[in-house]
Image (cartoon, rainbow, N blue to C red; front, side, top):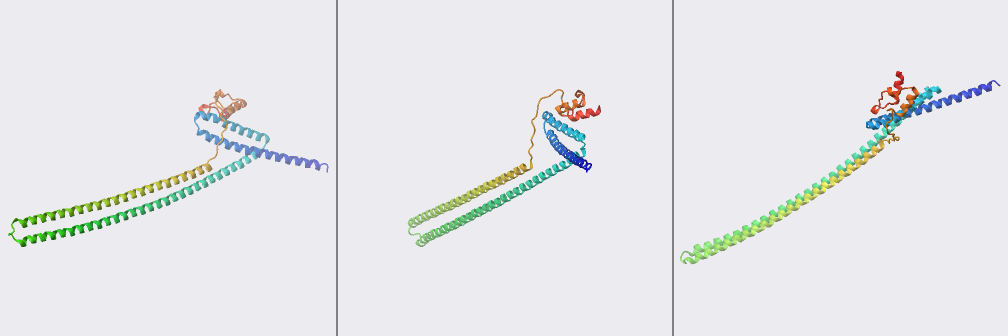
Length: 327
């Protein structure tokens, strides 16, 4: 019994130690994977910046590299490299899954935006069809009015022509009667009957001129009415076309506004927020990041002999590590 008690305590202590080591390795692995992900995002972001700004971002990148190196050393010292790598892979998978979910959300948002745009386009098409129908109806009405007006003008012209024909027939009959009277009276009367015929002929000519003037006046009135009717129909058609164009522009504007709003919503859902740390400016001598300087002191590397690969020849942690490997 005395020997079993220390053995049990030793087993419990060993189990607790293993659990602590596993937890420690998993924690370091998770932190390392996150640090790698952040560093890669910074590197991608740095490529989009001008060279003078890349040097400042490189300071942050080197800090992440140095942090990852410290985690590797800590895991090695504790003997938990396997646990760290396993946890790093699991965390990386979780990050990828999260990115896939964000991509799916972006696709869903894009699909919703497309549906909204299609709906807006359909509404605009319907409105345009309605406007076109209204324009056709208005044009048909204007054409019908023009036809009615032309028919009325034709009827009036025919009536005027008929009246003029009747009046001309009456005048012709009067002239025939006058000529008949002259023929029946012979030449015995001398110039008296001839003078009477001349007067009657003058009267007939005057009446004919009056009838022609009346017909001309009526025809002018009919033409004026027809012109007024045509002008009214043209004005109505122009007004209808203007209204149709204005409604079409309004419908197109509404469709464009809805499309922009839908695209903005999709962009907000798909886009992520990027947060950057404060950037520290100013060149230092030598031209190396602070993390690179610290790494050079630890590894005994002369920075004056190191060729920098960063922006403007700036020395990074990787440059120092490469120089140390060549020593």
